[in-house]
Length: 151
Image (cartoon, rainbow, N blue to C red):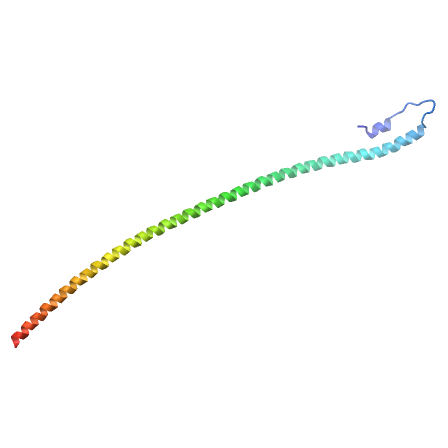
């Protein structure tokens, strides 16, 4: 690429006849050098700005990648936590059902034992009632015999 300095230092060979006016060529080259200098500086600034923006873009892409990775990790962690919580809930429910079944079995045993105890008490009461009835009958007979003797 031609630099502004190249334009400024450019020298043309002079011809004797039908040559260009040296002053006009120098003025034109001065104007051209000035415009080219502005354009060259602007292009250089734009390249610098483009490089800076490219670096920023790469940095933002890196941040985006990091955020995406973090989001994926957070989603995975949330799913793991949810799965573990569901497993714990299932285990608690299973243990509760087991305990409830065991308590139902224990209550059935206790009811059966109490029913047997009640039946035993009823039998004892029936035996006691029969003994009392027999005793009362024998006492009544004894009283009847005593009354017969007294008459």
